[in-house]
Amino acid sequence: MFAAYGWNRWGFWPYTVLSLLATVAVAALSWHLVERHALRGKDWTPARRSHPV
Image (cartoon, rainbow, N blue to C red; front, side, top):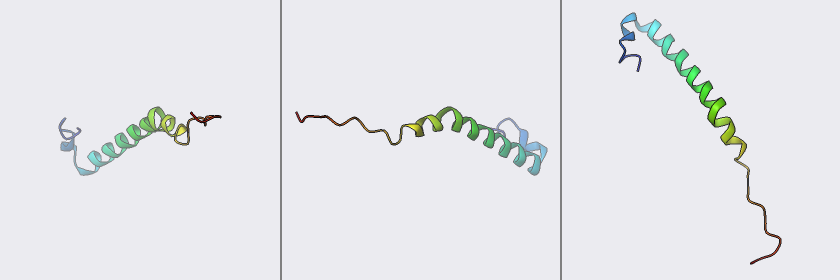
């Protein structure tokens, strides 16, 4: 995405640092908004029936 906007013209190191910072920010948002909530239900199982059908 950054290369499409032409931000790679600033050179290798600024482009790399900017890309890494953006990646960490998006990963943190993903963790807090999606993954943490999804992992809460990973051990969930339906309740057992007390009598067979």
